[in-house]
Structure formats: structure tokens, C-alpha cells
Amino acid sequence: MKKVLLSVLAALLVCVLPSFNKRFSSTGEIGTAGAPGEGTCTGCHSGGASGTSISITAVPAFSTNNYVPGQLYTITITVSHSTQPAFGFDCEILTSSNSNAGTMSAAGAGMQFANAGSKKNATHTSPKSGSGSASWTFNWTAPASGNAIFYVSGNAVNLNNNFTGDSPTNKSMVLTPISTTSIKEQSEALSELRVFPNPSADICSVSYQASQEQQISIDLFELNGKLVKNMVNEKQNAGPHTNIIDLKGIAKGVYLVKIASEGNVIASRMICVQ
Image (cartoon, rainbow, N blue to C red):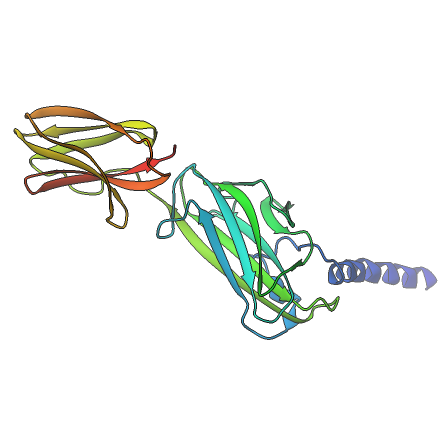
């Protein structure tokens, strides 16, 4: 009977001690970002006033929830609450099949990377004090293809050394890769548009086929339609053409290369990575 009681006590300690350690741990809890099959900070923390928010920003900025394949981004996670004095977070960036999307690196101040199973997590090292908010920054190299889903769980805490009176929330954001293929049907007057290399740095070539002699204009636009640069404006003969485009002074990002002639327009996305 004594042996049985000792076995039961040992089993209880195995169950209780991890919970005790987690309860009074000030480091981030990985695997709580809210990805499929996971929990969030709300699994433990509760009772505080609502109003916690999370923002996910990037440099260069994501364009309408798109990412540039292979692009290196600086990611900033900000957790905000008007009254709580300190903040924490957990973040995973996963594919649609729930595996790591891209690569997180260069953990900034007050945060660390750790693995929850096969999933890489970015999380705080200790609750970060802030007047209304706290932020953490790290690098992310985008994958070559496929959706990239940011899962973030944030917590605004009152530092009372337990889970009561805290204000957790969570957020997800789906990014899709930007295509570099032509975005419009080829016209009869212009066809076979190709930008190479793409992504481009410093210079690139724009090649196309003109069906007749015509005035050709080649322009570089931001995705919002703002003209960045007129690169060619001249009369050209019928036949194949290749123009070398100087990208010096053009900021990193995604642009539209548009070729126009007498009402005919063809366009392609171009990624500048210099």
C-alpha cells in the first residue's frame, strides 16, 4: 500500500510541477501563437481589461498582404494596451500545411528564438515594460513560394506574478507571394514582354515585340499607380526590341513596368532588390 501511495504522489508531482514552473516563469511560452492545434496566451492569462491590440509591420512594407519571394524583411511585432504596464508575445510564421515559412533570424532586444516541436517561435525573454505598448524586432527571409501565415499571440500583463488580471489577445495575417509574370493580355501591337533578371538589381533588360513602327513609352510605376520614372520615349521600328533599364536610385520594392504605344499597353511586375 505504501508503494502504491508513493507512485501516485510521484505521478502528481510530474503533473503539477510543470504547471507550477510555467505559472511563475517570466520568459515567453512557445507554442502559444494560435497556429492550428495550438493554444494562445488566453489559455492561462485572463481577468484584465479588454483592449489589447497587436500590429505586424515590415521594412520594406508588405504590399496589400503580399511578400516578395526571397526578400529579407525586418519584422516588428507591437503589443499595445492603454493601462497595462508590461507586454509579451509569441509568433510563428507558417505555411498552409503548418510548417515553417521562410526563416526568422537576428533576434532583437528582449526576445529569443526557440522551437516548439519543428516550429520556430519568436518570443519575449521577459515581460517588456512600456507606456501603452512594447515592440520586438527580428529579420525574416521570405520563402520562395506559397502562403506565409503570421500567427501572433500578445499579452498585456499587470506583473502580479500570476495569471490573473492580464489582457491577452491574438492575431493572424496571411501573405501571398507576388508574381513576377505578365499581368495583362498581350496586345496586337505589343507582345512577348519579358523583364530579366527579375528580381533585378542595378540594371535589368526589358524585351518585347512590336508589330509595327510606333512611338514607344516604357515607364516604371509603383503598385498604387504613382509614376516613378520614364525610362524610354521614342519611335521604334517593327520587330524585337531590348532596352537596358538603369535602376540606380530606385528603392527596394515591387513595381510595374508598362510599355505603351498608341493606346496599346502591356505590363509586368518587376522586383527591385538593390
